[in-house]
Length: 171
Image (cartoon, rainbow, N blue to C red; front, side, top):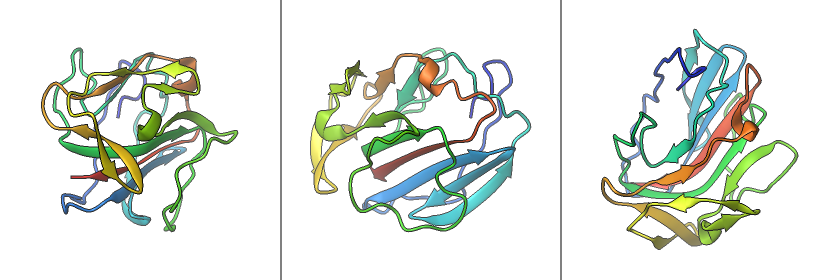
């Protein structure tokens, strides 16, 4: 969690989702509260010291966002959405269909069309390519050269507002 580009704090889930199944993960921020949900169940709640998320940075999917990508994710990701509201504040049923674009969607990536989503070009550094999963396709991240890079945008400079990041993963 990069609060504002100069003040950083790390918050993590308490759960491990390394079971070979598709799992829905959501991180939702409202005020100073950051909540992690796994498959719709509240996993952990954290109090944030810094709430301004105007980082002015690109987004790395499948890698840490240090000065160069590191700490790589190995597994599959499908349907990733960044929203400008805290979509989840309590236990919920994860969506069974692909995420949809609505008035609160800042970024939406469907793996079955990962090269060009709504006119936004994504740089795909993945050598793994697309694999079958979740009723369509998914991005495969399998080594230190696999990640997606999404250029900085005012769309995800969320300031002190609410937000939610959600996606499906399989490891």
